[in-house]
Every structure is written in C-alpha cells, then in structure tokens.
Length: 191
Image (cartoon, one colour):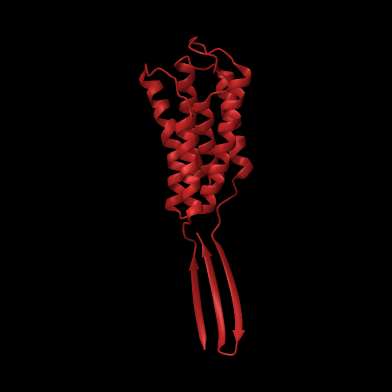
C-alpha cells in the first residue's frame, strides 16, 4: 500500500496577529506634516503604500514566515526611530517641532523596501527602493527634514529589516514511514 500526503502552509492566528501588530504600530506613528505640496502628499501616500504592499506580498505568496519577519523589523524600526526622535530632539527645518532626527517616513519606507528586496529579490526591491527614495526626497523638499535625517532614517529602516529578513525559498520536505499497513510518503511544501 502506498500513500502520498501533501501538507501546505496555512495562515494561523499567530500570522494574523503579526498583521494586527503592524497596523497598530503603524497607526500610532504621529505624522504631523502639513500637507502643503503634491510632492509631500506623494511621500505621505507612500508612507502607507509601501508597508501595506510588503505585507500584502506576504499574504499573496502565502508566506507567514515573511509576515513575521516584516513585523519584527517594523517593530524594531519604529521603536528605534521614535526613541531617537525623543532623545535627540532636533528642530525641523520648518520650525514646527523638535522631531526632525531621524525621518520616520523614510525609515518606514526603506524598511519596507529592504524587506521586499531581501525576502523576494531585486525584482521587488528596485521599484520599492525607488519609491522609498522619493519619500526621502519629499521629506527634504517639504522642509520637514534635513538630508542627514533622511539618510539616518533610510539606514535605520534597512538595518532593522536586514536583522530579521531571510531569503524566501520554497521549502520541500519528504518523509518516508513504514508500518504494518505499508509505506507512507509525506511531502511538505512551504511556499
């Protein structure tokens, strides 16, 4: 007797909790920028679009491990960025407050871009890095940040993502088990 069992990775409540964590942290960021120019509005839109694209990619690819890696990087990025803003207290170029260093918009978008690039390759990474760079440009152009603030935000975002992210691979595991009833071959596919 010969049996073939195929198991596929499914989303668990834990996977859904990573998504909830990302959304909670994301909505708790204090975005005080005044929406004055089209360039600034574009950067503000990308602040939401890039992380949502990253998490959507993990869902489309049925990659709960990727969701967990993104969530961990997102958490470290947020804590680091907000912690530095609190400690450094650097005045913004437009004088609105003392939260210039580092750029939160830039750290979030670069963390998302770095995740997409490292997890799924340059085909995903190049467009994401271009959009993240535009976000950085928009923060300088709108006088919300200096160049060094944007550069630091990008470094924090990339670094926090690279700590946790591994390359996405399709994992196949085969097991063979014999008993009195015959032989069973198990095949586990992870996508």
